[in-house]
Image (cartoon, rainbow, N blue to C red; front, side):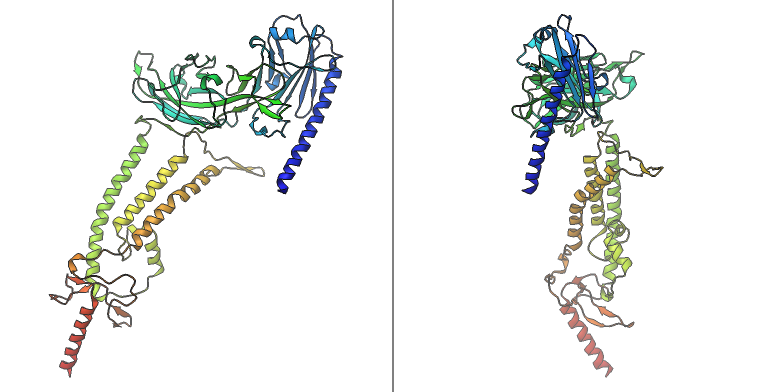
Length: 562
């Protein structure tokens, strides 16, 4: 409760400070604009994170006007000629423009939606601001706002031929309603710059050349979109307006499929190989700050067709403080797959080799298990009960090492080999979930003093290894435990029911051996009937019969000796 109260107090202080600062800035601007002559060079006021430009231009200047604070910001306003006539006051247009890379209205409840710099434009009259709103369509004011691209995520893929019946598919999720899409599909190889991509888009998790809602042809000279998209002068680019995609929910799943048309080389031969590309999808929305509701909203503004992954183009029918929601791919580009065998050849070959080695190992392991069982049967009559050495304990608990020489128990080699295969395949499957082409795992060097150290692994790979272990190990440990502690299978040929589990009595006859160690008869002993040899092949789980036989033989031996 105290932290919430403290946060509310901080927001109130931020609002008060911001309001006071802008009131002082506006008063300064209204004072300075009266001293400006028409068509005089704009006056620039600059602080660390705030730029303001004041200018006055003649109303009789033909054409539209381009107003900005400074050229290197990349932000500017474009006022059409029809709107300039409405903005005239006493034969001139006074303007106040500001630019700040940080959001000054952080006290707004939805301030987190702002992901671009904030810029504003006001028309100044005689000691007051001139309100501008409800402009007609041909009078609307446009502005360009730069978008940072340092966090842009690129996803790689391979486009198949349009006549192959295959398609590479990417799924992504939107994170806000009312956004527009800017899609780029750029070939990775410079030799493929003349390739023509076919893009198919649809809401949902599936798309195909026969089932889509939007499609476009993307080429080096720009795209040729269908009636629901806007043509773009950018190569291999596709812009879809807010009205075209019509996203009303915050979370929606969309799917885009990529193919390429057949290409002809210099010798006139048609290439049938896949084309590697990089795709990025930017979701954009234009926002302005409402001083009445203290919220960022997009009412009266729409995303313009000049929007790219580097800048946001907005068209509005009013003036205020503007910003934008431009997500340079915070979209969940979850998967990229195709049925092209060439891309999956290494993975398929790896799985096939692993399965082949598994079959060979199972064949050898089964043969060794049978040999071990025969050796145990021959040693059953004089089995020594000795404590296991540390080395044997380690061999028993190490899954991979125990395959070569397992300890004497019912956890066979075949079962251990199967557990090893399960462990290997589980880790391969889990790693597929994390290692995709849209992530960079190159380790970053660490600087210690004046020395730059190259790490053998990146922090991302360490985290992925830890996550993979937490996902794959529990289920495999459970499998191993089930095999290790499962009861031995009863011998059906003995015809006698084995001892019940849980009994604590010894299953054998104990006496001192020749070397001072206890000789313990095993649980499975030679039967009395038909046991002509000391190492008979028929066994029973009933030790009472065998003990009685030994006592009888001992009494006969004592009477003969006497």
